[in-house]
Image 1 (cartoon, rainbow, N blue to C red):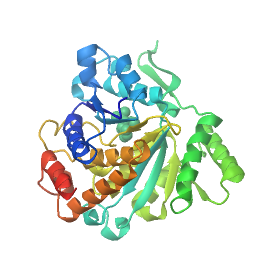
Image 2 (cartoon, rainbow, N blue to C red; image 1 turned 60 degrees about the vertical axis):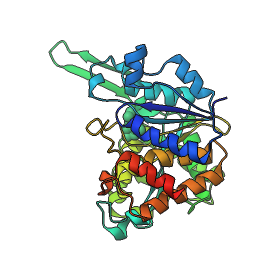
Image 3 (tube, helix red, strand yellow; image 1 turned 90 degrees about the vertical axis):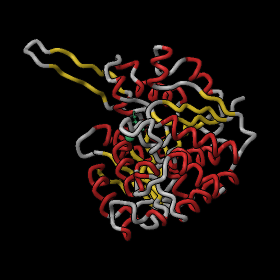
Length: 350
Ligand code: IPM
Ligand code: MG
């Protein structure tokens, strides 16, 4: 059985996952690792961004770690064959509905954020993004020609009680092991799906989690509060689209988009999907410039949440802290280290 399936993908994906492989080989040499094409490179080789075989291998692995997908060269591919469609199919196929995106500011990086040190120092916030529903998957969706000229595009935002409840449950459970506070972000002031979201979260809280502090927040206000006073947050649960947007904002608090890992989880016992939240960064791809830490920290989450190697995860986390404290910085963090040199720094600290 494969322990870890690597899906390097496109753009900077192969460069950052290569550093994960080096770390894994040093730290957990007994892990059985496999690799598959995924995203645009899979489309070029197989005509689809995610083959049935790759999805089956993912589902049969203990953990899946991807780099990034997409790039301008696939902008003209049919929408259902685009690299991003492969990613959505992977998330849906693995049923990883709860996406944990930790915004954690390492002390050594408190000055790398575009926000003032005192606002981000010690920040430890967890965004729980619903990942297999909402407007990313709702139907109908189409673009049609209008008889009077011009076109009309439709996307559908849709949530069921079950989908909201299961992701909210993950958020409440996580909060219990942290600072016991959940913010639930939606747009109940304008959207029916937001109204249902608020109702379901409120009911679940009353029934099972009344010991946890719950606050409802409108998603636009959440965006503002994230850049105004991020340390007020412990766990924030939100839908697929708002979670995508709010997690990019939160990532910048940590110093760089290149620092934020994520874990997408299904139910216990099912494989998790681990992804750095950054994209394929075509502008710097292939130049050995990307920060591999989001990918390396995603591996740290995989060790902890899917591979049952908490001790190795602790070691890896400590090594990242040590490397940063020793001054290791890639370009996004204001330094001059290459991707490989950042990998070297983590390996040396290990
Ligand atoms: C993310 C990314 C993806 C998303 C893209 C690449 C489809 O932005 O994981 O945050 O929108 O979910
Ligand atoms: Mg995103």
